[in-house]
Amino acid sequence: MKQNIIFYFSDQQRYDTANNEIMPNLMELAEEGAFFENCYTCQPVCGPARASLQTGVYPTECGCHINGIPLRDDTKSLADYFNENGYETAYIGKLHLASGKNGGKNIKCEKTAIPTERLWGYKYFRGSDILEFTSHGYDGFVFDENGNKIDFKGYRADRINDFALEYIDNYNSDKPFFMFISQLEPHHQNDHNRFEGPKEKIEKYKNYEIPEDLTNFKGNYKEQYPDYLAAIESLDDNLGRLIKCLKDKGIYDNTTIIYTSDHGCHFKTRNMEYKRSCHDSSIHTPLVIKGANIEKGIRDKRIISLVDLPPTILSFAGIPIPDTYQGTAIQSDIENECAYIQISETQCGRAIRTKHFTYSVSSPLPMSKNSGVYFEDYLYDNRVDKAQKNNLIKSKEYENIRSYLKELLLEQIKKIEGKEPIILPALLVKKK
Image (cartoon, rainbow, N blue to C red; front, side):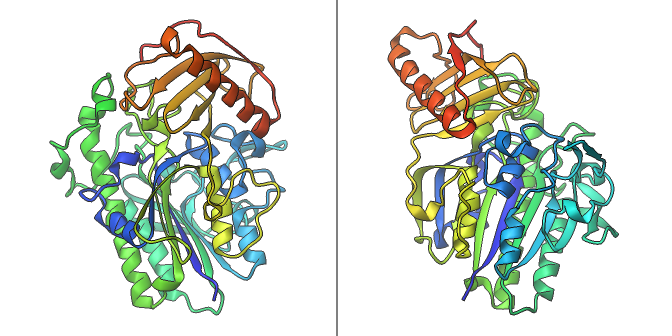
């Protein structure tokens, strides 16, 4: 019997927020499946990360290396593979892959209904392309697959989750389903320039200990962290409601659940916004998987990339993995030497995260797809500097390690992008 599959996606959630105090439902789910301790995004920005999930390749290779570039018209998405293999498909929440210029076309649907062909194969839809443009922390609207506007009242994460519960409540099919739930929380509300947690939960986190990787630098975490954590607790509440709904429907045991996020959040400590950097606060994300083929109760220490999740999802459904996919299914006992990260918009950057080190390079052309020349940027020894306070990129003591990481990064660039750039020594020592 084929498994139903639910991919539950948060936005801008740090790895260290996945704990028993903030997310007890997620941690209970992890006891029924696996908690992956070393999961890293392949691009710490919303659109490119989502593009990788739908296409199975890195952002530069699917053409979505920055926000505002939709998937190509000829894209074969995850939904297409599921549709072809006897699944129902549903997408709930933030899409962020429909609006913008691509292939000579400029489609504007950030605040309006998404054309059917830009739902990328998903047959059931309750969402919008840029959810933060059609809603706030409280109240807003989304669209269905036919372009009908649906207003909602109340806390956004609750209402988005309600659309998923509505689908499950009404599910009455011989076909299994693949559902992608894309919450906006805990992402900041752009036009308010702040995080918006549920009002009744914020006070609980007023004195919550702020992580060391934030307190060592200037940023806006002091005023923003309580709302941020309150929003994440609301996601956990909604995950719990989803699990109860599946159990009430009698399909929980036959449903695989994958929970992760597109990237983390550094609260303006590393640059002037919230992500788009090589630091763990930006790239390290939670990952929990409960499924029939996942060993229960384990803490998996393998390095996992976001780009490994599309083949993982297909493998759960018994769907052959396309040759074009650049990741490897988790079920294959993957042993990545490093996670490869592309960084855009604040820089045209490339980075690797090994079990012990972070190494990053950048070009002074932030909106470029790639570069022929990069300059060394950051080197951290994460064994002794978990908060990544000390940039070692010019350290004499680490010259051999830096040389090794440089060659490893060049190998990744060539393997993934087919490019052979030059990496030059750092021009100056970064303060952060």
